[in-house]
Image (cartoon, rainbow, N blue to C red; front, side, top):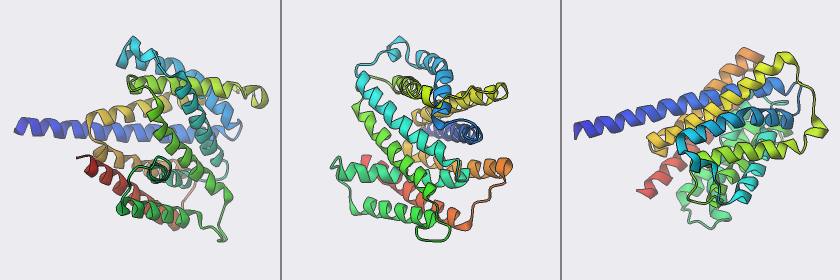
Length: 293
């Protein structure tokens, strides 16, 4: 009994560690993207990121899922997911032109709130008053950060919020994928679809990359792929209720990177709103887990 308990604890610790490192990797990815938006279109950044990341995604899919991971039974579903992901990522990278890294990161935390709301209103899934209360609390946190009607209001603050909405649609769209396909197949085709779709816009936004930016684009692909892979693995080691809350450590990394690279210091309202959003998100995850058991 003790060895089984110790094994479970060890897996949970591994899951938390993978999640934390994965989140930190994605924050570095976002920091690099914010740097690159000063000279390149968000679409071009995404195109180069996906083209560079595609071979790595294929190797990971082969390693983790074998040759079957390269096969899809519903290519249209992956294409539609690619559209959602491209819209979300473009909006988020565009927000970096106007907002600090920590503020944009805090607002995107509202994604679980959107997932719950869409599941209830569109998919007609049963949602009790407790989760609806968490949804309302989450949106209240957004209002604290955005402050509509106030002197500090920026319309650009709505970009990360809209990003969170499209990310929520992306999460729910996983139901369109054939259940025989693994998470590695989903990752591979998401990167591939992103590369193909963004390539369609390249003739209109292309800027020849500077040689000194080559390492930044490479780092973008490596940290982005590593982050997604590590976070995916985290859920294989521990329940969502255990590892999902550590997604919110992104705010710490975003604040640190924002300060070190751009001397950005979020105001108190941003931290207060983020705390409210995080509390509602953690409650939603905990409630979902409780209902499953």
